[in-house]
Image (cartoon, rainbow, N blue to C red):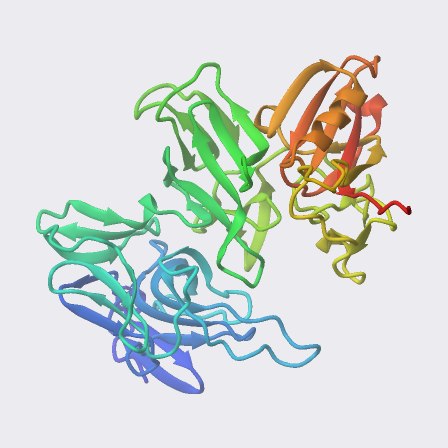
Length: 473
């Protein structure tokens, strides 16, 4: 389609999408919609759509062009991230879609282009655990709700805004999807419901979480999450109880504290306008570009920025000791991570690798543990024994261990784990005297790491519970 007006103003407003050898046009970027509007997840219903070279698909329902007139911009619509390629062949067909907000690269006419490096970056999704297929629909209903329905009409997700005087929806220049009323006041916003990502200007409020994906290809909730507690910003593995692997502490408790991602910092505050309680300095956002912060399935909180393509520019969570081993999934469950980030199992007699070709997938016990460790008539109490790993530590913050004992001997620590049915492992932590240390019981075992006492200034032994070998009569 030829453009009939050549002024720069009109070029910045006219949306020309070249896809599949054809030409499609939108008169403007289209950041808002009124009641009642329905967007079906089809190419015909959403003509501004692109298939990227990796197989990903973007179908835009709302689009907010970058204020610079081109570059990374925000779209609300249906997005499908491509599956991993099979060998040297093409990616598998993209069939499972998220309804959400993504950063898309747009040219000066607001066309989604740069199909090689500009693959959509999903920064919020309504249905991360329940992807929909071709033919699903999002509806801004006549009574003011935003609803996602599957292709058979079943409700998959709802914003819960019915009856709250919603007049329309819009996507902001900050990437915030907003339902607004007749006075233009915000009724509902995606910034209040983060998934695994924060955008500049967004806050993580007390009581909400960033939850990592289960894996690179699996958008469902994983077990790692970031939250603001009364005592600071913390990252956890979801276990019983949750195991904490990062903590940015506060000078004093601050009920209701929250964290805000601003240009150049991640700041913990008690209330708007109050001095910050703690802060992490971050790289500033480049002119005319976009940054986002994502908690990933490996536990890292990484900042990405558009630099002629998406690139990680900063790793926010700093752990000690860490050469890549201090994160809870570095080597998978029961895996042991060494200084050179090599992964292995605790020992060959009691554990085997989940995948021998990929040792970072973790390990499993060779003999399944019994369902109970309690004694019963005719069964000895000692159904378990411990495999001991010297100079090995565990990531879990001592204050969030299942149980902590101070001023105990190593033997007392081992007995405590064997006597506790819920204990999967015990870390014995001590200074110079192995008869006077600390014992931390863990309900579940994720990655461990070898440590050098001369570097960390403590000694640590991990005692892993395994099934006892049967005795011969």
